[in-house]
Image 1 (cartoon, one colour):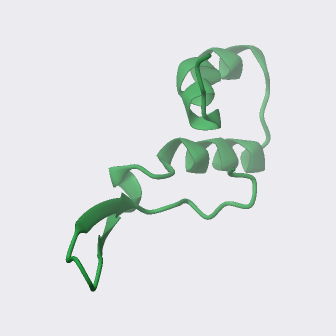
Image 2 (image 1 turned 45 degrees about the vertical axis):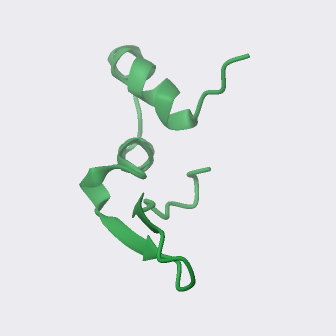
Amino acid sequence: MAHYHLSDILQTHYGHYQQHHRLSHQQRLVCQRILSCRTAALGQQQWQCNQCHYQQSVFCSCRDRHCP
């Protein structure tokens, strides 16, 4: 069973949906934020464990209340 994120669905179908449906300004903003969520577009943080010094890069969230 495949697992999809909302951003995957928007990435695939948002352009086509916009051609056939009218979105409010707020709806467009939410879609754009979700599409950029956890990508390089919003930057990244470097996390490090204080005990083993393992490092991991984590992309920043859009922090939109509609974003899962």
